[in-house]
Length: 421
Image (cartoon, rainbow, N blue to C red; front, side, top):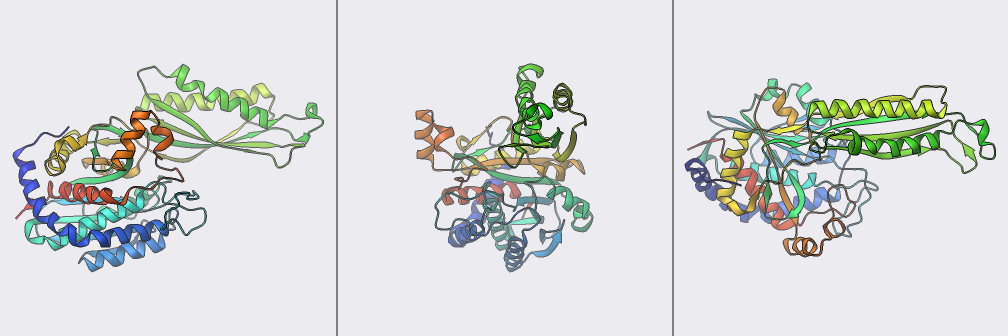
């Protein structure tokens, strides 16, 4: 994917000098990662994580502010005149019970770093440490933004609403990365719409409760909801053109308390992913039409309630920023290690840091899976079964070389935008 340029070569030369310090801190970074993995915290409850991040960043010589956007942390590494580069890592976990069997598995019941945010934090701390130790090689300002609540799509917005740019300066570029289930040592970046927009909805369908032995006296919301789930699956297959992309998932359906009681209501939680506004509009309209239509067909005497849980826009990687950043990264780790994965149907709120002030964004993936295990699963056609993906209770990035790749990529990317000395 990358194409070497004189600028990329110059960045690679500087990165080689900065990254000399990685060997000395690699073991410490692995310890930080394992500690964070063992102590996950849910969105806007990342108090221990934030305190640990703040403590470490202060040790590196950063000016640290806590409580930005509720639990966010901003670490400023100012080093003379020059560009301002925002490096972002999210740090919330998920309500998942870990099943990895690792000796550093989660100690918090029902909570797990199932998306790799602990790896993101560790890589950013490593990058800040390396850049702080090599101030003589670059000039400018680095904003280390440790963001809460990415999993509920509210953290970036909370930090911006708390005056992120007014308080710490508007960056010239936003850079970040996400660990993914492909071979460790590889990087993936896609210019343009790279991560899908998300709309999450809660739907409550109302029926009429009755004894299970007398269904004729009821309006059964369980049947109503079941019909709705099936009908929703036709939106993508029958209402969206074949050349477009959309995902509609019913992630939760809850109704009733006992086998012989027909309940009064049923609740669905629906997740929608799209890349284009016209497709998004069409899907949302179809969801509402189907929900209300199924309720009407079932004879519901009350309209369903449809409320938004969260929503954040498509993440668009700036083409020029992505080319510049990935050229530099490829010059360090090897062009053959940088690929274009195409658009990802996962979602990310990091794009808000760019769209708010028309700042270019470059956000990439880095692999966290043992290359041999990935290759064997690929050859056998069992990737979905044998390689746990993000949000799985078995998801756990390989500590190395994942950490080294993440720190190398983020450090090199920062240097591609900072002024050399």
